[in-house]
Image 1 (cartoon, helix red, strand yellow):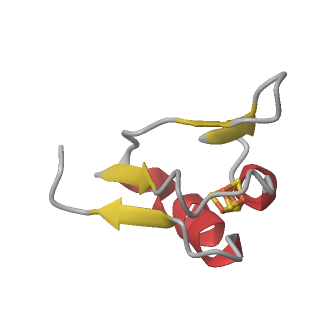
Image 2 (image 1 turned 90 degrees about the horizontal axis):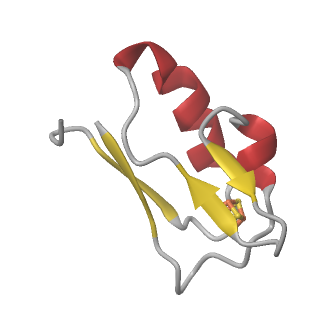
Length: 65
Ligand code: SF4
């Protein structure tokens, strides 16, 4: 599974990084960095991050390895 963040929508709020600090973080410049791929066992954390994004900028592709 893979995450995709729409960089046009994303305004670097960082709420996703609070919900899922293992996969999302804001770098020293305040820009979002994230891990594209993740394991099935982390799906709950990823879904929390998706739900927490006020701009619905995070998409999940379940078909990608
Ligand atoms: S919560 Fe949404 S808008 Fe904020 S940094 Fe994460 S993806 Fe971007």
